[in-house]
Length: 82
Image (tube, rainbow, N blue to C red; front, side, top):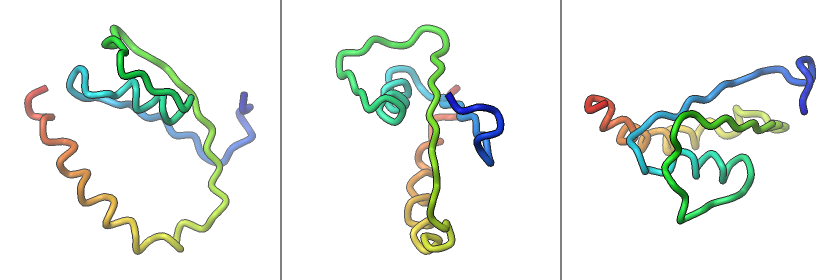
């Protein structure tokens, strides 16, 4: 486990969305490299931890950012229905 002083930044991510869209499976794939097609809907809250180290300069990849962010706009399409 990473101690309080072993990192420069701490980010907390909250994933919200419609039921049965794969939020938990997305997190499990990222954190544990697991994916379960037959998983049941999560009831309540699931907590997972992942330590990510960035050893490159982000400025090098600035030109690519816009291409990755544009499709994200559709990801919030159903927020009005919540």
